[in-house]
Length: 401
Image 1 (cartoon, rainbow, N blue to C red):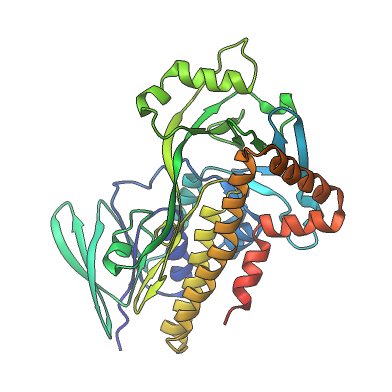
Image 2 (image 1 turned 45 degrees about the vertical axis):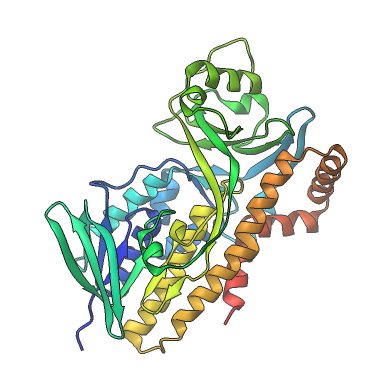
């Protein structure tokens, strides 16, 4: 019987990784991307050890590492009192060949994957085409595609919605996107000032009851690298006011030295959500990445979780499509990936944000003291890293049948 391709909606890193994984296994793939190029999103840029290992299995890990910065230690700091805890990923070197966080902009991963896809004749990448809806039956999915020449239909064996937080696939599936939106927005900007001169590691989270912040080193177009800094912005502030040069300079001068102006290569404002789709599967249609779950960036888990979705799902699809595995194997994708997103990704990122912004002085002191005790105890330090590096979430997913 003829196999129709798997259609993937979205050519971000999650959709492209899913496409490469399927193509390498011998499955025909069509990727739809509404933009006329690979999306250049700058938001995500942290890759945890299990993710780097997964990318190795696709033959692209070494290339990504060559374009990235390695961050073997990261910090939690208090804005007034300085360093609270410094975590050393070397403590889990026996669990992974990559005991560090890899920092590189997500669009660079997308470019690497897109280049690897050129070697596969069983992949079609259609830019300026998007999924406008679908209908499914027992034998497949008819995907409605909107493109520059009007609408067409593509018959698919399965459809993967990797089309972001505003996913058309998820909306057509009509599943709830359960959770909430944080009332404040995030201002994220970059500076070329080297924060290592102030004692910061390449990734640090700074607790403050009035204005917490987070910093991440990124390669950008360097060397030298840039430093991305995130601040919360009150819900009522006008975006033009927030992005005004004087406002941004005021933020960074309050964070660093007020005695100089800082080069700001880019700046943006965005809303932050904590949501998980009620269903990751509806018969022949699946959700992955931001289409399935979104979270705040404190911990760098969103993109990683999406790549874990892609690798988990495509392995199961190949078993069903090529090797006769039973269809109910695909239900395990929903059980595994939704469970760990709720238990780990949502729980940890919410906990991280509440730690940084805690206003009650006693609660704040107790939580920071707990972190000091954790980093001072080798076993507790190691377990904290197993959780925060997403090793624990991968293990948990594999336990779920």
